[in-house]
Amino acid sequence: MKAQTAAHIEEARRLFPHTKKIAYFNSASYCPFCTPVREAIVSNVDQRVAAEQDDSHDAFDVADELRGIYAKMIGATKRSVGIGLNTSHGLNIAAFGLPLKKDDEILVSDIEFPAVIYCFKAAAEARDLKMKFIKSHDHCFDIGEFEKAITKRTRVLALSYVQYFNGFKNDLKTIADICHKHNIYLVVDGIQGMGVEPINVRKFGIDVFASGCQKWMLSPQGCGFFYLSDEIREKIKPPFMSWLGVDWKMQFSDLFHYDRDYFDSAQKYEFGYYAVLNLMGMKAAAQIIQDLGIGNIRQHNHGLIDRLASYIRSNSFYQITSSMESLYRSSITTFTCKDVKGLHRELLKDKIILVNREGSIRVSVHLFNDESDIDKLIGVLEKFAKDK
Ligand SMILES: Cc1ncc(COP(=O)(O)O)c(C=O)c1O
Image (cartoon, rainbow, N blue to C red; front, side):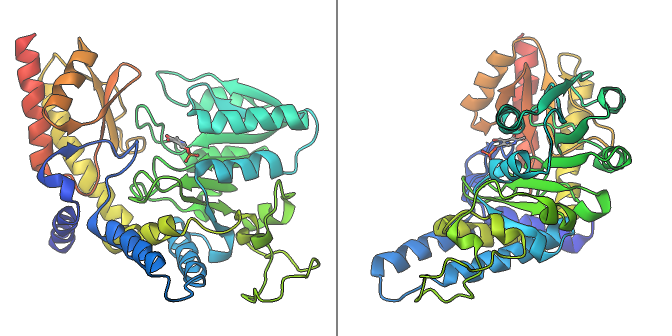
């Protein structure tokens, strides 16, 4: 990593007050607020308390800016990106809006996060579609099993970019190539990779990409964005519509017009007025990620994970349960041992915040973590293993 970037990441740590007291490794659940996010939200609250000016247009400007920022982050055009309520927003556009016919098949993995499953399950019931599960191997999505599951009726594969419980990063490029060969739409839940694992939706050939921003994107809970490829936008049947899916040309003083055109962009699928406080937080957070660069953040995170992994490998009491191969690794690492629950309790006692998922300790490493956090974690691991 260039010295310049390392200095920036060090500076970024200072933006997170929690780092003075705790070692936080739970960004895969949700992020702590940094000072710029807090200030952006508080300043908007103060503005509303004062109520001195009509600032209702500010939100439209910020939303527009954010569409551009997110588009750049994922290699898309601004018109293909919409501001979402969460990850589920984008997934539901796909589940209920993709052009599918009775008995068409949707494939999902058998180790998928429920956000991906339930919207397609409901869509399958409502639209007379079939949902089929792809068998995983070693808790990872298996491309061979995916290919075996494809039939003439398969039209959709819905999949996480990074698996929430073990950090396995799917090889989306290879998967997308298979999808295109068989005329299958690829719908990606990007939340566990967005902000830490580079992605280029157009180069990869992803049709729909949905992400909340409350985790690695450092934003408040209950916000996100979605990407709809140009081809999909043309084909989608609106599964819902809000008055702000219509292009009012920012003229809101004369609304008795019911024949206005919808936006000719992903904005058509946004849902009513914005959660403005969230929007302000999203912008402050996105600027930090953008300034540091997702590739640099990834490198920083993986460097810290390597430090942890080399300790874990040196102590036979522990076993790594996530992939460390460069193609499949992410900013989430998991490991197990005898008495995971007991270890989790000890870690929390020492103000090391992380979770226990599916029998492993899940360590989510982000830009505000540094070697001192990792060493604190290793210190507890060392003591716990000795006491057992
Ligand atoms: C893979 C994955 N998808 C989706 C979500 C959340 O979905 P939503 O943003 O719709 O609440 C999570 C975690 O909360 C997740 O880990």
